[in-house]
Image (tube, rainbow, N blue to C red; front, side, top):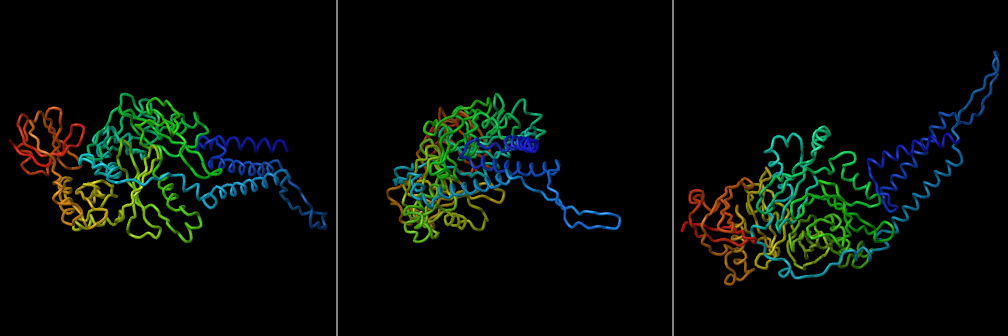
Length: 554
């Protein structure tokens, strides 16, 4: 008996160690992954005990059907496996624990705690025009995640030795970097062989994509990143964190850079705030230096300003849905559905107050094709604001933008909510079949047939403002056309850059930089020359940069 238990225990320990090393569940009694592992080990123990009983011939033999033949007596023997009493008790205990866990999960659900789920997100009604500043054209994100990934892939494709050794990681993140919307994309080892060849130096680069200008930069590090999800053994990011913080329940992984461009991994960890396993919410983050592996445990209230992604989009959308569904309790959310609202299908991000805010629409639970408002949630602090603005839902606006140039068969990005002359406006980029941004569109939230479209941002804005005036949404006598102010500049230096397949000229005049798109006119390449003076009309984009709307020689 003791031998069988020892064999079963040894097998269970080996399987348990292997499972923990690979799956890395949190050693926390509230962790669902830990309980899954314990159930697995219970099954392993029972199965190993069963097989050890066979191999040690621990069976009960029973004589049956004895028959006497002429040459003697022969007994037929039936062999039965008789489970020991303590093993039956163990099986019963496992079943009982499973039942208890089901009851615990059910008691922590919204059925009994709708009010608590509704209160997880504190939402304050706010004023759109006061909160959402008018963005300079140079700060409007014109590329979405997929386009940023395509631009980054092209950039690493320019360096042959990188293409053969590294891929783009899926852990890319939109952040605010020096008050600009940027997506940072780390690299990962292409496979285990490439890891073996390069692991001593680490991952030497990450890619940074300016989501407004489409400028893509391959950032080389002085020392390579030695800790990442694509590492193996002790330098695997999750294993490194788990062995240092065995009880933390990690929610997700984000890649960010600090104000100096140093790479970090952000691993928010969560707790349950309702019952035993209900009301999942972020309690803090583990901050890992991607180069040195240095770890910091930071409470959620003390997360530094440069970190933008503490709460995942999925968690915020779920909490926003709970806030909208359970206003009058659980039963009302199912039957009467009085005052029940839900978020729309899709979300995007807005750069505001040096933070990243998740934006999504709010619609009635009957899912009609209109929004009754919008909700913005800060991804660092979870501050939430709602704006009761009636208008078209996002997909209707996307269809309207596509319809304005339907002959081109473009696809639309999910809208960004912006402020244009204090009018809530959807901004949408239009992409061709190759995923490249070809045109831009502004669509009024209140009237989605008010659309401005052009192959330049300036042109689309001008077209949109004209439509706002024509439809009486804004006062035509009070609003100037959005072409900026007039400046007289002398070109100290000129740089020609390809941005998203389009030529852009950067003109430095003193401590100011003027950005001129090739679409301003076919004569532009021929009139630009260092030392010459120009009269330009441009919009102030902040930080000493200006977007040129017209230019001519003085």
